[in-house]
Image (cartoon, rainbow, N blue to C red; front, side, top):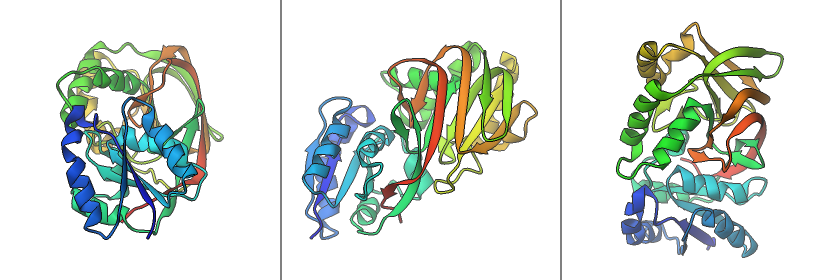
Length: 292
């Protein structure tokens, strides 16, 4: 029987994930799996626990939590053959939306208990890996706001933070370079996507694929504050990429040089320090993931 380690984050979903511990174990046992569950106690624990699971010979490592938990576990698994499985009990669920994994924990457990996995791309920057999404500028600031919220969660929390920053965010000047293309000017954000969704369901990169060996860079130029409210609904359905001040490109490497240090998120998790220069490289098929 495969040795399956579950890295369980009880703090996910503002602490509500702790209520799902028994449900997670029952759902996995119902598939014939005998999981070993390890709990995180603080941010960063999931990375350490996943590395420990690798050393102990785990056949698969399951992240029970939200996008942040999958992000941390993924840091340890990039470049290995041990697959990542996801049990969605967190508030952020963009990666499972990209992968086609349902929110239903029983069905997700059946998928995670499989031994078949597929190799998917990740993006690398600042010594870390983004499984699904990365954002600099207003997108990073929205992630910062969301992380500091005490009450709101999930898509509602992201939407509230987005509405706030539509008014509050100050544009920045930057130069963005990719494979044979470049753009410079005043910007609101640079999204560097592996999958098409981020921020609780915003369709930021409609043409992104997690296995095409490319980063999808979407650059939003500056707009007056009132005009930003017109742009916002279009980021939800992806139609904003057709706007005149929006540029969308694919690249294997992207370099962003901004005129000030800005918050940057990876899969909704903030980098420890703001960045004025960001170099992002795709790592093709570097992470094995259990998918439907």
